[in-house]
Image (tube, rainbow, N blue to C red):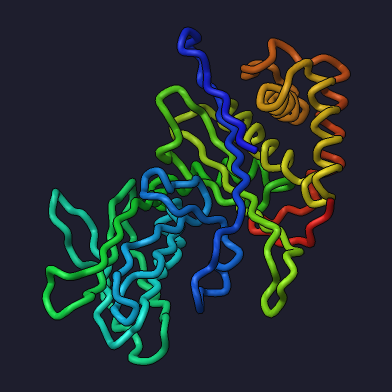
Amino acid sequence: MRLRSLAPAARPVVGFVALALVLQVPEVSEAAPAAAAAAPATRASVPASRANGSTARASARRSSSGGATSLVDVIVAPLQSTAKRTPVQAGVRNPRGQHVTLQRLDRGRWTTVRSRTAPRTGSVAWVALALPAKAGDVRYRVVVPTGRTRATAAVRAFSVFQSDARKHARYITKARSYVARYCPSTPIYIDTPSIGPRTAGVATTTVVGPFAPPGKRKATRMRWEQAIELRSGMSTSQLRHAALHECAHIVQARPLVAGAKAAAKRQKITEKRYGAKGAAAAERQADCMATALTGSSRHLYYVPRCTRAQLADARAMWRGYGTKHRSPTLTWTARR
């Protein structure tokens, strides 16, 4: 499911974007880190592989020789914070003590920022490379020598955006206070690449599954990763509405835990109540869910006003799902 609604260019109003992705789990390479096995992943070149708030997986070139060294995968979370960063995981086939380096593109030149030595045994080894704090959208690459010369190397480039935690500390704290009851631990990032010049916020829910639990063959588990992205510089009332609107999108995904049928049933109710289909219905409901808590219709965008029936539905969503399944990295047993 992919929901995306952009503000019409003709209206001088800051709009909201709701983005939800459902991806099937690809094959997990041998000896992949446990967290990566269940992580949302794509296998395309960045920036095409960038999935907001999710883990991106970029396949590297493979040697034509079965016994040669190559990069199996590079696994990285493309959306992070300078205060909390996830290491880059590089899978090295036929590790023999090679120097695995993480390089950053600075002013047109690649500079090594981290380096680790791969093990000397095994068929595949995963090497964790700590990501340095660097605010903004930055280009990196992992390099692993595959021969005796520098000319023969496996390389995979990717982008990572780090939200500036220090610069936006007070702003994030304020936004967090507005959604603390319903989205208490959902990561909040500021001025991400998804925030265009006329976009106030983005909410992402990336769902993967079903996949098999460790040691099991039957695929019975589901997992999501969720995040909220906001633009900086909004007024207090704008920020409150935007944060609650995006938190509402996070809450809208929670019926999935009860199964696909339950989620579809809830979606039909939403579409009937708000007189729209798919993304449009979700946006209208999120607007009314925010208004139900703020008591103000000043920043409504997708509806001119919320009817009594729509406000009742909005409050029912907060009551029914607002305090359930609040983990932004939830894993659950799949149901039909």
